[in-house]
Image (cartoon, helix red, strand yellow):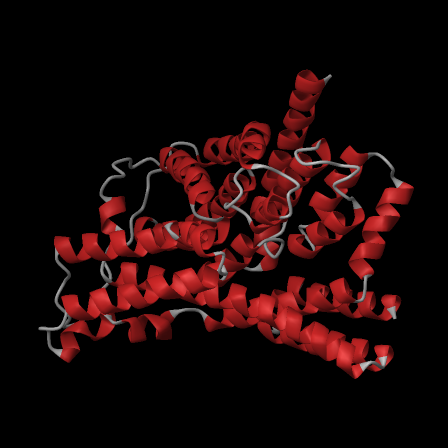
Length: 428
């Protein structure tokens, strides 16, 4: 069973990677792969009750992420429709591409630590549409945004889902993870950022023409500011909502989406329908990329089969017995997270290593937070941030591989080296 499930997943993964040459949409491949994996798993297991229970469990987790993604993308579309990002773009005065790259990279890094890497990626990639006319420039910036968002999310408990898992499970504590992983995370960003900025040289920023909204009246400064503040406040306060209520994050962002909807309706209540149509939440929902949403569903459900069938746990156990050294094992897990979603990998690792042997803030858990959080940047489908960027800018797998993967790998290895040297210096 393990061999068959692994083979089906690998074939589906290769089809996604070769979407361009095959001319088959990655969303269709992801859905087909998920369906085949669950079907094969159900037939070989022979326990319908158990498989249905596991499918229900996976569906709940998938739905929470998908609802969050839909709400976050809708909020970004509403802000964009109101020209809310003009408030941010007007603050950026540089006309030099390399300077813009540094500003965007560092801003994304720290914003991701406050929000989360997925939401930050959606906001920043959408912002690049307002700043850059050249598609190749936007693809380059999107790759750096993915790296910056994943690096920024790794060093705080609320910035990345894997760090959050370790935090909730008691493997890491807030201050320790922030102090222990920050330096490695910032190096993870600075290495590829410096290389990319050097490669673009002194090229000027080519801004796109202002979008034509037809007969619709432009939004006022007050409307732009209100929508931007309410939208960003919704995203920022989701971790606070979770901490206070202990409810899933998707519920907090849906609550905020409802509030933004009411604010927008009240703000435009005196306008004609034709004038406010493009500003409504209904219009924003129609503009989000449902193809990427469907792709995300397929990928998460496919990986869930590998988790329930213990394929990932077996892989982690094999690493433990074959490699032995914790630092190498965690490095490999981080590299594997570029191919397979980091959430089940970290979950399997948490099951393998108990807190009695490896207590809170142990080297294993801190290094795991860094590697699993940043390793996904190496391939575009290795993280939620990458998947979001892929959908928003329609970035081909191979294009990201050529333009960004080497930079992400260099940053990953440099950050890992910094963490190991820092840990040896502090605990040696």
